[in-house]
Each structure stands twice: as C-alpha cells, then as structure tokens.
Length: 331
Image (cartoon, rainbow, N blue to C red; front, side, top):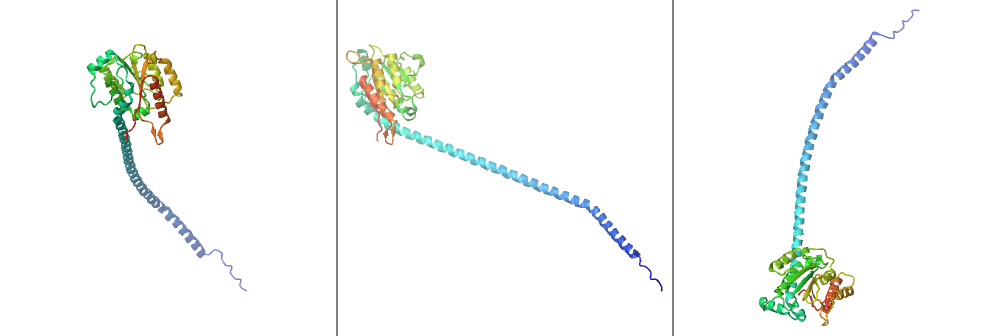
C-alpha cells in the first residue's frame, strides 16, 4: 500500500498570516508614537487657556473684593458718623437738662436767701457801715438780699466733686458772684476747696487783697477749677478756721456743697467747736454760713449723703452764728 504523506506543521499560508499580523502591530505602534506630540501640544494649549481663564477670574474676584472693602469702609464711616451724632445729641440733651435744673435753681436763689439769711445779720463795724453807705446800693430788684454784710474777711469753701461740677457748677459760680456783690469791699478774701486746697497756692495762709482785678481773677479761675474732692466739706472748714480765725477780726465762711461723706457729723461739730471757740458774749471767732445745692435728688427723694450734708450744715451754722440755705428746685 502507498504510504500517506505526513502534513506539514508550518505552511506558507500560516507564515504569511503571522507576518501580516506582526506588521499590523508594528504599524499601530508607529502611528501611536507619531500622534503623541500632537496630543501633548494640544494639552499645553488647553492648560494655558485654562490658566488665563483662572487669572481673569482671580482679577475679577480681586476687583469685587476691593469694591466690597470700599463699601464696608463707607458703611463703617456712616456708622461712626451716626454714633458721633447720637453722642452729640445725648450731650446736648444732658446740657439742656442741666440748664433747666440750673434755671430752676436760679429762680429760687433770691427769695430763698432773702428769707433764710435775714436772721443772720450781724452788727456793722463803723468802717463797714461807711463802706456800705459809700458803695452799696440796694435795688428793689436786687437778686440776693439778707446776706450778712458786716464781715471784713470772707472765705469760700467749695465742694469741687463730680456732682457739683456736673449739675451745679454754673449756678454755684453765679451764686458766688452774687454773694461777692453783697460785699462792696472787704479787707481780704480767700477761696479753698472742700479738701482744704487753696485756689492760689501763693496765698496759702494769707488773705487775697480785695480788688476788682482779684475778684475777676477768682471768678475766672473758678469756672474751670477742679481740685480733687471727696464730697466732704469738713477738711476745708477746719483748715479755714485753723488758718485764719483771729480775735478782733470779723470773718465769715461760706460753704458751697451738696454732700457729706465723712464718717461722723458729731466729730465735725466737736472739732470745729474746739477750733472756733466763743467769746463771753457767745460769738465765735468765725461765722459759718452754708448754701446747699440740690444735686442729690433720687427717685425716692434725696440721697443719704445729701441728707447728711443738710443735717451737718444746719447744726454747724446754728452753732457758729451763721445760716444754712438749702436751694430747692421749683416745679
């Protein structure tokens, strides 16, 4: 029998197919490598465009932020202006209220002093009678009357505390001016704070000469005078008596205040009694008068320190030959 031929594992057709496939793969690789630079270039262009867009967006955002900051600054300026205007209105309202209180006080000064100081007149020395006849003219419409005018020396002890400065300073200045006008001429005068501080240190322990220029200077300085105060007139009264009390001189102290914050009324009365003894006729070395200003009103009435001031001044003036005048608001 004829033997069949054995099949060939690798024929020409198989090799052609393998070769063609390999060539296709190589072609794909070549094409892929050739396209890469185009893709890279395209990506770079897109990134630059995106970067430009982001830059523009950042600039727009910065402009918007600046606009908002400017608007915020304008709003803050408007708020500050509104607050300043509100503060100014509040100050104006406070000044108007204080002026109203002062006007009410001024309306009562004349009649109150006239009625309460009338009993405190002293006998005039011959010199003071002559001075009064030659200089003083009592008008029918005089704002203050009844104030003792025989003293040859006068001392003002003035409470310079915040309550006085805020609520009664203008009225106090005007009252002092009126009291000075009652005395046409004295031999000496002095001004001290409630703590015993002298208005003029160069005149410590000495009398200020009574001249028109000196009176004007005292009133001018008094408008802005603000030495430290504890709302306690006792140190000033005691210093005035200790430094100036003398036999043979007619001296009067005028206490202007609104509060007494000291520890003891009785202690003040005892100290002043020791410093200001009476003669055989019962006359003290120094006459003490006081004027109380109504700054201590509260909802329920008068503050305790205001009541204590009125109590102290009433007793002190009574024991030392003077008069206490408590000014009151008119309604």
